[in-house]
Image (cartoon, rainbow, N blue to C red; front, side, top):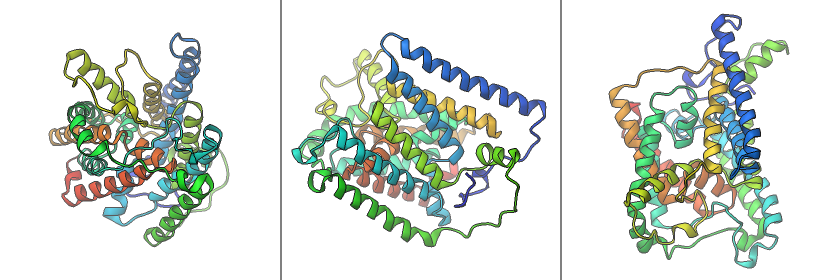
Length: 412
């Protein structure tokens, strides 16, 4: 899965070449093997655990797969957007387009089984189909600014947590605080703009076939327009198809964006079919909501919040299926980073620590108001043929653009 479409910069390429027979390299492989064995054993134990069962086990494994793909393909929305905005390199954007194309086909098939008649006025169960309002636009802009300020999206910080990032814990902690601000501002926004906002789901008018045709046509046009921003392919030396080549291609080099996106799309369809749509903020938001509820800091009623699908939050006393997914994501990324030699602990800088925390706060607020982040509202929402996904995606991209123009990303 070599990088046929070039990445953004040298930091996103393969890990530096080093001997695979040194004690340090062997230790990395042993630890990585133990991590993946422990994850498999944990999934097995979850199938029989009271209150969990197969959905939790499947969510853990889905998270592991997602963490490996995210880490090996460098699938971070901020990095992908930054490469295009700063360097006019659209190569990594094809990972997002491929993920949306593959997941759109899969969602259309799954929707047909869950809701055969989309014109009935009902929505596909649990899909990320949300209201389109000014609050969604503002949430996307704020989320994008938070991405630029912290140096990654929430899912990006989760997989970088597995790489030993010093800033990821601060950004994730900030997102928990941001969710709290989101809960405090929700009722006013709901009454002001959200309650009367339209919920636009394309299959209501075009059916699944027509919606998929429009979906693929839009992605195809974007792919064609972006071709002019794909740099020329670098020359690649001829290599024999041997174990060394396979090792480097699978475990050391950055994966091809098209292959990465296709795998993300397949994982997303499997997650929706078996458990719930992909998303990485439901457990984070639920943690904040639970703490605020126990402390008496929540409003008496969060108007209409629990009636929406997406990365729904609730008061919980245990790890939810989404929680197992993000645990698997971080640990799967950790195992992949160990094998690739990309795991590295470093001390954070003071300025970067502050901006990571503040960026996390902005992302947490945006994710709470938008009912999800770039994986949930954007990726799963667009795959579900929801207009809210496209609106949120455009707002996030604009927010990142503004943040880069203001050079907010230079702090981390």
